[in-house]
Image (cartoon, rainbow, N blue to C red; front, side, top):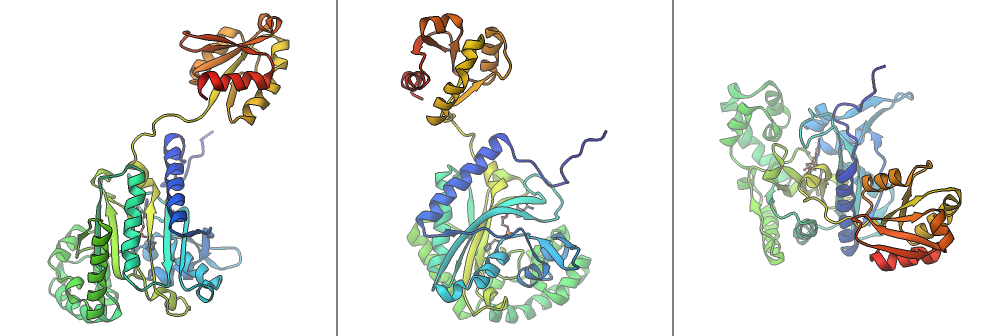
Length: 420
Ligand code: HAM
């Protein structure tokens, strides 16, 4: 019979990769705690409209990447492609805007996008998402970038670039739209079908196109950054000043646009050349209109998301097993009778006591202990019971000790002798 496999772009996360995932999550939780962020859990499934309205109906995500289906009740539902939309929904639904002047929250979990899978790009992937609501001042933009640097520092990730840009506000974008349309009109013949449509509906999205010819055309286009209004320019300059005060080095990349429509002013991406084609492993920015557009009071917002799969690829191998483990090799019924008390005594002290479920010869149990990577073994047979001891043998065969037969005392002694 044919074996059932995971869906294309969906993966099991196991072994060392999973350990790295857990490490990333733990380090991140630590930093979020220090900086006053609260964790929240969001549903994976939401109304399709939530994403269409927030991410934008002319974005690649909404146009072609969402896992959308109609449920048996006839409602259109979508597996979340990102977390910001759900965070905003929750912020409003929980009434946080009325309770707090400023809200700092984070969440972690799987996101779903129907993209063409390749290294670092999956249909199910994981994000750690951080959002701050209610702060207009660019100090928080700089603070978030500093937070990212601290977090990467603790994980030992050192080779990366932080690129920043400003995509302005509605005013800058409206006045720039004319400039952009005039430019692309002169190069219409070189644009793909999709971009011709974008030119009509949302010309800024042409910068997202992956078609090589369109990328060449955008290379010659004017930059929105050079048409920022006074307020957006001041905001960006203040942000740069704060970034300097934090001592974080960033590069301004006027070409940086983001694939989601809600951004205003500051946007940023953290990239690494060690990742291949999918270079960005953290990305985010400000979205000062989104809460208002989703039906709430005008509230500034800013945040970022870490692509956990991509970040994990940058981590060095985890060193030194911290797990406490030992093998119990036993021969005969009397010795087997000691297994459960020893197991209970080990668990109480946080030691993983491994053993063979079936009765096997001592030789075969020793081989098994070796395969499991246990550094030492407790040995108990009729002779030892007669002597009132449990033998502790170092697997290299160099040392051997006699421990008391009493399970609690034996495990206590085991810890003492082996620095467990
Ligand atoms: P995004 O740039 O769409 O932004 O995604 C953020 C990060 O998620 C990317 O930089 C990447 O590391 C990871 N990512 C995205 N798609 C995939 C994929 N198919 N496979 C693996 N990793 C992927 C957002 O999602 C915004 N919500 C970020 C944000 C939060 N902005 C403000 N607050």
